[in-house]
Image (cartoon, rainbow over the protein chains, first blue to last red):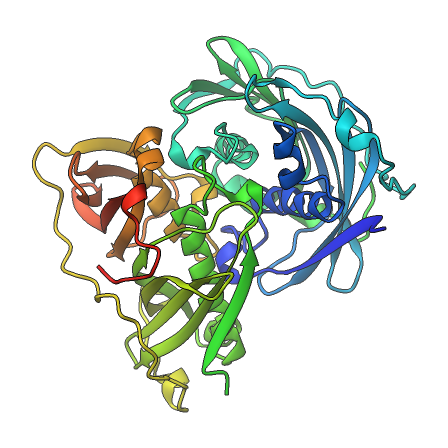
Length: 253
Length: 253
């Protein structure tokens, strides 16, 4: 059985950010894509879940990178299930450059939503048969407890629109990341890379929801949150690192 | 020589919009991707142009679709050069469903920018050797003259941020399309598809530029424009079609 799934990508110029690298947003899209592909291969993808009235939803994502692919670089993402039970699935990813060097790891937690009720779904129906959970290393820390930004944080209001939504008719993971990253100026990205990014989703957001994006203004580690009518819907933490000090061999933080 | 280049895609659930289809924004990303891949294959891609101090920039895009791929559908995009001269290159695309049925066509016009001067570049250096320009059909009309929205148009102000930029350090094509599509409510997309989309780029936008997005409020054909300090930077036209009336066999408008 396909214990792991690997997808190799070529990074075209058009996909790169202003620094000429794979942006974190696109990387996260790819992480979700390989997870989806592997779930499809294992017969626990969208097509299977929809017959049970369920849909996969990303609940948590942590990614740590020491380098990002540049224009015309080839890179690969390998994914595997760490554990799966009736409440959630933990799925990890290894990111490698063209030469096979490790440049990052990711940890993701997926839950099922009951599409009609918009409540947490039960995965028992797909975990009755054993799924492969290989004991592969994923040396990055699990998601820490995320805290709210400090007093004096920057605030920005945004209203979600059509292009922010995905097939679940709620706001797409990547759009939350966009919104958060966009709170920093361009020269900050020229000088720093996202060494680690943690994001946790507490509540779905829908078309026309208005959110307040709060971000820590300074320091190498920034807490972020999105509030809807005062309620926290998303928490995130960015750990920045100056580009020149980035290690070439992957080391977890 | 590779007269045409074809790329086959599988549409994962995560890439779909709220209607469960490939969004226009992702389709346009893919059109740009296959163009980039073919240019790379022909030796006139980013790597070649950068040695001449040039970069490819999309100047115009027209796309006509009668149907859009849905979740887990496979589709392909085939591209070829219609003509290339020292000022611009015209490149067309055919979009087909899994069975090989035509579901759309696109026409694109590319120019080179001089990266340092930010002026129009001269493509003579890459057109000195003949490039393949096969006489393949592309039955959709060339871009019409785009006009400004009518008086009484809707207006929305936006400031460009980090995630809106690409490797040329100007605003990415797809972000303009996002901004425009986001002016319509979700139920409009539930009832209508984008039958044809035309977009022309007059001036680059940069980090922190503020634009006014003006869109026609009603009717099956909507003119749109983006103004920066009163100057038009982007013009677009959307031709909508009710979903149920969409022909299954491709017919140009």
